[in-house]
Length: 77
Image 1 (cartoon, rainbow, N blue to C red):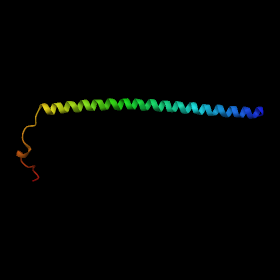
Image 2: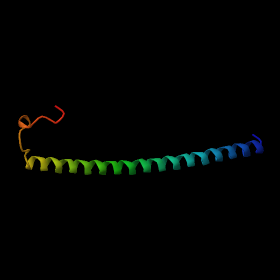
Image 3: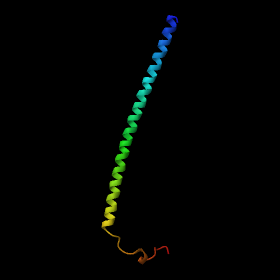
Image 4: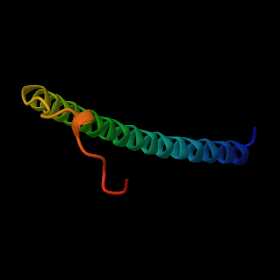
């Protein structure tokens, strides 16, 4: 190989490495964002489950009054 060919090949390899480094940085940023989003989603799910448990315990502590079969029909009847 001539020195010019080697120089061209080296420049090509350096360019490829630079693009691969940028791609790795982009993937790393995307992965970090996905992990953050997963953490927020898990926290929201946990809060929703705790709220549901509180609602269930409140409903079970205060029984419903009256029997639905004894209620008068709605006004549109």
